[in-house]
Length: 410
Image (tube, rainbow, N blue to C red; front, side, top):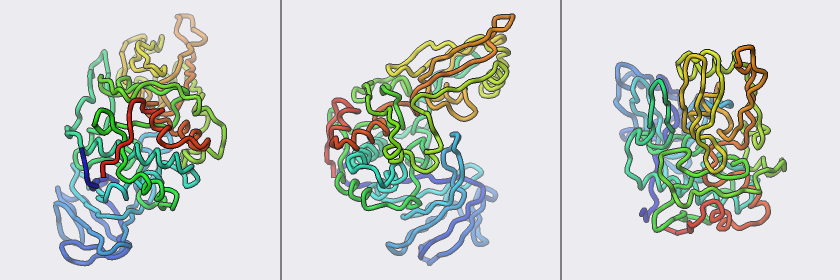
């Protein structure tokens, strides 16, 4: 188990050309650099200031130095995807990534956590919620850093004309430890300035992680579980994690705008009605969407048939019965991607097939769903309600991760 504070490498953006500003003095090969810069991919190398490099490393020369990256994509493939200019502290490492350049930020774990909590939570959040999130964000990261890395491990169980069973996990990254988007943990540097409340929460829990039988827990979390959390194996590989059990959550069904604002930062607040949500498609819309997403002509869709649901009700295996083709899709995120131009809020939904035509094919499909996200582990909105009620962060953690305990490792 890790016993000293580590550094983390965060992948921020990958593009053919990257513009950035060094706010203060940075060092590259012992030379001072500052101001607006641009790098471009060219013939397998990085072109910068008239020369070619395989990689570039910019190290801050002082404590107040930072760098700003333009056109950072946030919410990748989600309904609120957009670009931002974001500012970071620590080192900037630029390396060739295929036919693009990847920008990587390297910094100490505790400093990274201040940004993650500021990006995931509002400054108005209760201290108990912020402390709980600091512990799970630290645990998730250190569990990853302490685990063997294997690119693409356990992500595809089947991918053929009859089955598409896959999941998306953190082993995808080979050039860095974690990405900066919701695929890992939302990280936006000091774009959302660390506030004293967040700094206090991270400082008060420094080195604290959740453990189970002496190992750091893989502490997953999501926005809104929809009333009951899910178990790990229904979303990712087919193993059980005893502390990621399904628990009922009477807290997350809230309309309290003050509490919601603690969890839903900025563009998240554009998303409404996520505890109970509804999506409706005509036959033409659904058949076109599914055929586009799966690359197969299904013809008219006869039914969407859940084959397996997790403990929360989230569908982990779905059979799509079409006029020309039938396919089983899983797990939960693949289902959400298949049935939406971006993502459904969750895979916890029921299907209502309406108004059959003369051949018995529904002319409309309505999905009535619950929750936002995979639902495994801590429910951010439920935890926000608990924190607002004064429930200690230790109790919040043991509620969502039964059998775990808080351990200070450095």
